[in-house]
Image (tube, rainbow, N blue to C red):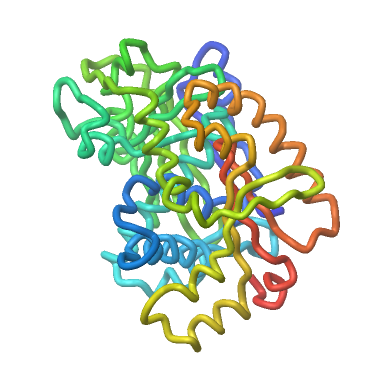
Length: 343
């Protein structure tokens, strides 16, 4: 299993154990899953006719994980050399998106945060009220299975991480004081360095307390985070597996519905990858019934459930590769097609 690394700093109390360098198992499909969910509320427009903006954005996020990430012979997840030939301005955009995706990955694996979400789109949609209004603040907020809120500031760099990068991220992370009148359990600055020998991140607790408060309806927060589920809802197919049940959709079949997509392009994609996305059955039922207050309990129980499922699937000679999130979202890729593609 490929791995990435994080180095914790300035954590105290019960979190002081994080002040060390650690390796974490991670595949490019874990990062693809995070790219999709961390950008969910940015994907405005319909997935289906006559507008396909969200479909193309999702394809772009999949392509990022396939084109620019690979694992090397030592077992590290690293940048692909395709990244090296990009224009510097393109590298900045890709690094920024990866920075958020790696922050979401660590939020799940290290802090058990299920639904790390972009703040800016929530403010633009009128879901989050910011007081006072300021852009010098963290990018992301999310909740764990105990209902505690966390703040993340995410940055991605394809060069060396400078001291100034860390200081800026810390200042932005510490700026949020209250979320719905409660202090966040933790504020974390996450700065990820992307290169060709290893991918590593700094996780820093800034400790500072500033004056910005965020207020919002938690039901609206959940609706926004799971907006992609509601877009897909009518097209999802119930599937029962030996270890879990889910509602899922084959992206390969969806590709055939896109107007103007060349048939040769569809054929090449279908030959190289068979990709499905889905949501675990229990979560899907809660979302369809809009029982958002029960989702916290799902998160709490799902931490253990997905760990057991992932370990079981990894130990078996399974035909598919899975990546599960605490949020109940997963992606599935054909293992046989994966091996032929040489990813």
